Length: 263
Image (cartoon, rainbow, N blue to C red; front, side, top):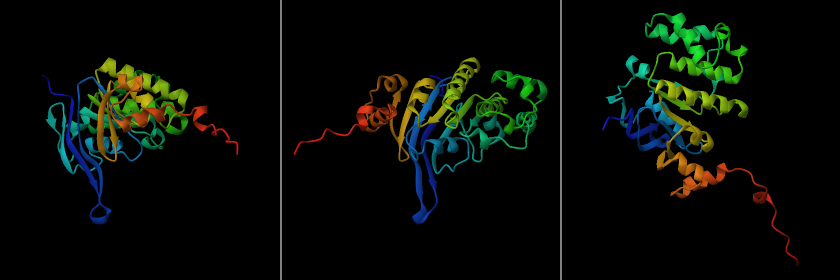
């Protein structure tokens, strides 16, 4: 059996000390095969985004191990790690430098890793995310939210990584644009053979993009399940079932007042 692309073993993340000590992630383990899309779901504060940040070195790993492509990743993360793993953040308004053109944003990782032929690579990256060369010298404020997130995806892909960590990549976008970005991510994964970890509180988003998912609560793994089980509305765990029920949203019956009782 080949090694998984991502192997997370008993991951722990602790912030603070003493009375301020918070265990944000408690002994979380999962594996993701190469070319697969894996979801982390749970309500706010469940630790799902902290898992992503710990994998890419933005949160302290207090225990456990992270393997990427069979390699035990070092702390701090090295250049080789960032060639393999890249992250797309939730808010494209915050993740792009407001005074950098698209050209500068995309050329920066190439310069850091001393890649050649930057111009060709930048134009190719724009094409891959459905934007033409006319976007190259625009600033973030000249782009829509969906276009900004496409640039953020292009920046993540320009080094040709194997793994993308996606932290709520569509939650800051209008509903009409969310589907476009999800379909783009799905197409890119299939064309490039990418491996995804997607964090979302939206079960529909996870079911659209991922085959398997891990449900988290209070920093702990509750259960691992499949997108098919999610779509069928069935879960073996009570908490997961409550998430599924909540995701079905508003119903008129749920808010109808009870019938008056005659006295």
